[in-house]
Length: 63
Image (cartoon, rainbow, N blue to C red; front, side):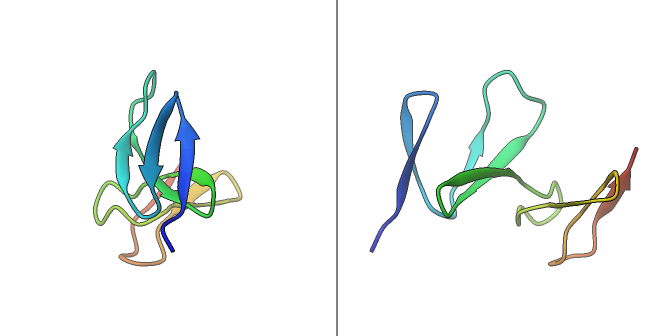
């Protein structure tokens, strides 16, 4: 089954990497939510204690 979501009046497929209007980054679309994508491997980023981290490739950025 293909999941789709509505972001800025456009439909995106789950797992698709999309440019986000008025943003400096890209987003990973999944489970009905657009999430920030890792700049290295494009997997979804996790927010933890003021930092963002990627569990797939180890990318991390704080502050």
